[in-house]
Length: 171
Image (tube, rainbow, N blue to C red; front, top):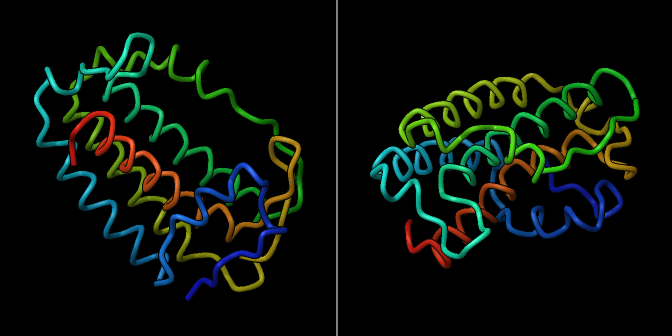
């Protein structure tokens, strides 16, 4: 089982994500979330997928595209840091969303891509040794360990699911 990272293993910004992850097996949580999120998003209509709760806010499809980008980014960082300490640049989520063209895709296609990315990342996470989980690097000018990114994957998804429930009235 992967133990919860200490606060010095991630940036203060990431603390909110890590805090959202319950004290249970994080790999099982990632698996459960993969299934429940896929079911949620694949059940939406295109009209629901195009909904934004306010002017200038992301549509559900854009938010889901952002979740896919972030999932891949966190997994890439975890993989790189597991292999060797290195420094990686940050990523601007707004630039990524603006250039993703998620709104031209179906919400079902985005849901399937998120599920596929998560399934692949679960294999990656399961491959990490105890030693690799504690390796670290710099991303967005802050220190992170590999296991912090595992928790951040789950926490980031939980964060957005809370937003979907509260502001988009889904889930």
